[in-house]
Image 1: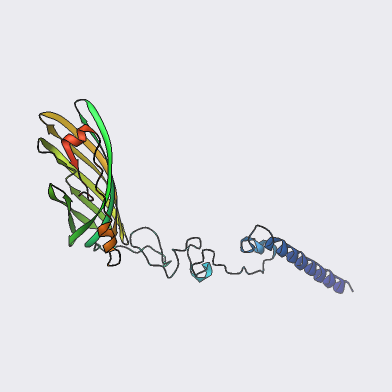
Image 2: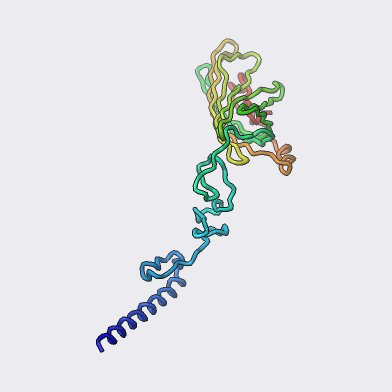
Length: 261
């Protein structure tokens, strides 16, 4: 009799617990708390949480999605080498080859800020624009030409190591009555798929009509690889670098970068 009573109490408590769980389920579904986020296992250890694809990329955590809050990361995603992200969820980032192949046409957009000092005064100006460039590559050595209307073409040369780029070249072109003792820009960047991000700093010192001047500046650029589908649009979508409104920059130097015309 006691055993039967004990079994009855256990069964009654089990039914009562499941009834409470049912009420909680209705409350959760009708509340702002998502059902899949409710800690069911704390109240019902035997509960198996339904697999949910939170970022709607076709994969759940149980199906191998290692970041179910980012749709660009899943087992079918294209892995980008050297960016520190495991896009395809295979457990590691894809290492880049010793020298990535970046030869070809690229669409460039760049902004340059420069400060020049002369006669005890300093002027600062910002230039920006777009252009297309052609990168030549021989092994790990890379180069391309920049063109400045009325002045000709000027090379930039450097190397690529994995997906890391280093480049250098002239920072600016001087007017005929000016001479430079130092004129260089150094650019560093990374290749991420079909995009290159570059940042650099430059310096130019010299004289104009016997008076000394010095300039320093910074550059930020984004290059996008051109394909047959976007080539025609890029070729027509060009902007000239803004002309400087300051006397010093107008009289002494002509700014040019990878997007100069």
